[in-house]
Image (cartoon, rainbow, N blue to C red; front, side, top):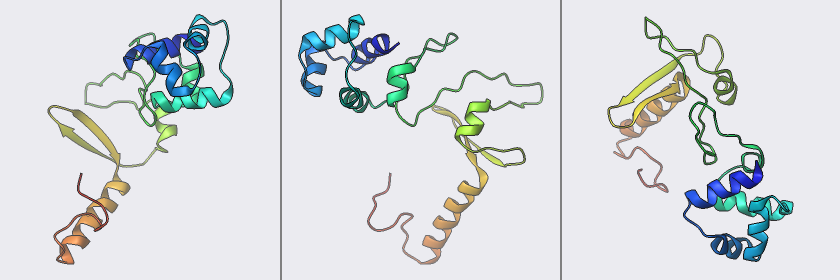
Length: 154
C-alpha cells in the first residue's frame, strides 16, 4: 500500500523521485527503494511526505483506492464516502462513515445548497444558521462587512 500510494502521489503532483528526495532530505535512491517496496522511511520522513502531498499519515500508509471509483488519496480534510442512490422521492442515505465524521445523527437538520457548476452541498442547519446570524449582526451594526476586520472576504 505505502509504495503504491507514494508512487501515485508523486506522479499526481508531477514530481520526480529527485524532487521528492530533495524535499524530504534523502537521496533519490532512497525514494526509489521506498517505491520498490525494498525499504520504508522512518516516521519523520513519512510525516514530511504526508505534509508534502497534503494527506494524512494514515492515508499515506494505508489508503486503498475505492474499487468502484479507483480514486486516489484525498487531500487532508477532503473525503469520498462512496456512492449513494437517490430514491423515488429524492431521498438519499448518508454513508455511516460520513455521518460519523461530521457528527450527523438521526433528527439532525441539513441545509441543501446547490451550484450548477459545482454540484450540491449539505450543511448542518445549526452551523448554517449561526453563520447567517453572524451576517445579520454585521449588517445591523452598519459595518457592511460580513467578516471580522482582520480577515479578508473569500
